[in-house]
Length: 469
Image (cartoon, rainbow, N blue to C red; front, side, top):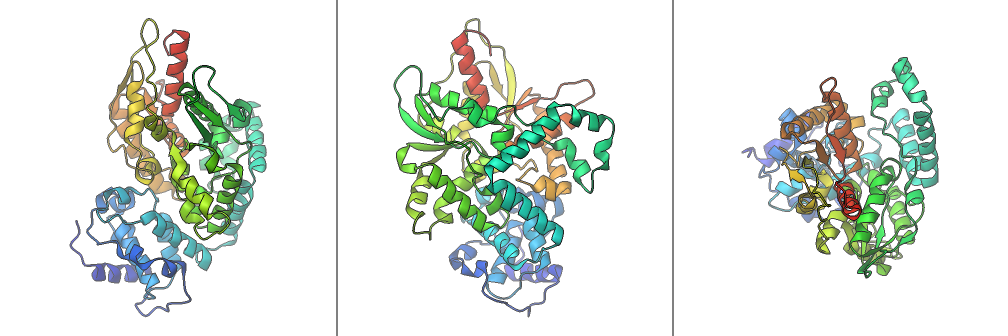
């Protein structure tokens, strides 16, 4: 715990940011529009410091949650102006929310963080032609048009399955890609042959037994293209536990990518689309199986609280939003029985998605599912709640810090000796898969990365078939 006073911290940060105490307050800003009690919650106790990856990496106060909150409060008070350096600091934060778990005062850092980034974008202090073009193409074009996203996904699938990707890699053509694209190309995820709409019917009911619950499934955007098998497994598990599953067609992005990157207007529009597609009053629960998406989806009530046409439905939506693990525990899911002849033993470890454990406070339930699997030996991973470095698009925008966190995480996973790594977020899945593959010894097979629900679905299938999973 640091003994430095908040005033001395702020003075140091002003100097580091190159802003004088007499910097103009400027016009009203989004941070100033917040309920001031939100900004006052931070007691500067320092409990967050050892949980913050960027502070642990650099040891600098400005790279800690309380340091960033000091800057936000100074801007709200008119003591500092929004500068490029402030914008860079807000985007150096992973947004992992580990500080919220450690905080004894219950600081709403997620709200502060997203508001600060929205103000950075409003003031355009990081604006360049290239950045503006990339943000428009990604946030405003691709991820607001689900059919366009699927079309691009299908082109990428064709590139991968035709052998052109393998040929370009083997001949070294990928090294000719401009800028950082050459380094990012090996991380390109494998696109599924069939997307969620091709695997899941609009309405599915249990073949046997009584329907106990009616739920809606969110298929996501990246999840739909890269992990549609996880969505199918989620439906299978829900059916096995007496749920009727409603899956709307061609779903839009939930808006988490936009909200976390300061594009509040797009986030609000995408939330409205979700509410138009799914009536929360018609189902018992709305199911998310991606940790990062679920954390954002839970806060539609906050996002649309001042929208007279959607506020009431958004509040109901937030009350009914459930992570899949949370819902299964809530309805007392059926543990799978060991198939005839038993199940082969396998060691499994669990990496916690930051926004699942810190943002949604879902930590115990995935472990309950893993422990229920016949033959599974759960081995706890060191620093399981630490960020793996994915953090949305952080591994693209901040590759050095993301790489350091990836290496740290892979080391802890390898130390468990597990052959299976369970995690419940698409970004984490890809970050772990890439890291474990790169770290594997020549000729060895790296641990398999898989969603806990996929393992549960396989166990149910093995039970039904009377064979090992």
